[in-house]
Length: 239
Image 1 (cartoon, rainbow, N blue to C red):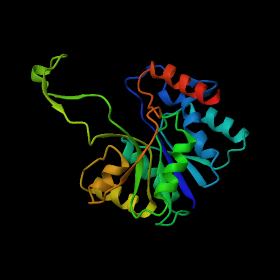
Image 2: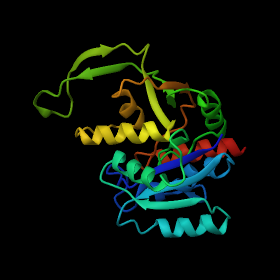
Image 3: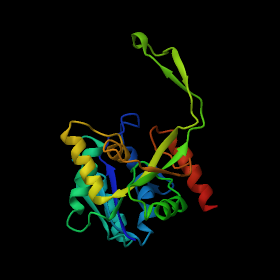
Image 4: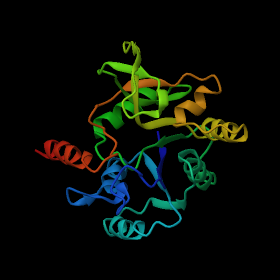
């Protein structure tokens, strides 16, 4: 099988260091986005990688030059949009000439540098013949509380404890066929609905993406402090 990789990277990361976009933060000798791309660059099944960038992105050129120097010729870029789903749609549009409706597309966060290649392989193996597709996910282990922010205070009261037995935390990559994914996102946007991830767009059409259990250390960089944990994960894998 072959697949195409879409990486939305146009977000600003408002909770991260305002001086640098989190996907370009240095991490163990590379940038975060280079680590995020690495498992796909090493996978011969990946036909092309498309990165959706912010219009004012001044950092990608340096990363792209390093990738090209290393022989990574299958990486291209497009201008992303205001929302994640805008960026994914634009990246998908750039693939339309080469991808067939039944081809698989994987969407992976630029701020997830710790994807285990074994998890990628398991996702591809489990979903390769599935009619819909799905995503990596991990079971929720913490006790969850629902709250109502009465008066907008910083310390809201608990309204209930949420049962976690059937709750999972969505990770990436998410894996769907090119045609249905394009149609799901187009229909959502036409209705003024903007999904938080690709799976939700398919869910809105009545589909049931499946969850493939992945490593909880496939973390998303949100705060600057997350870089230390990501570095520890990457070092442990090299040990």
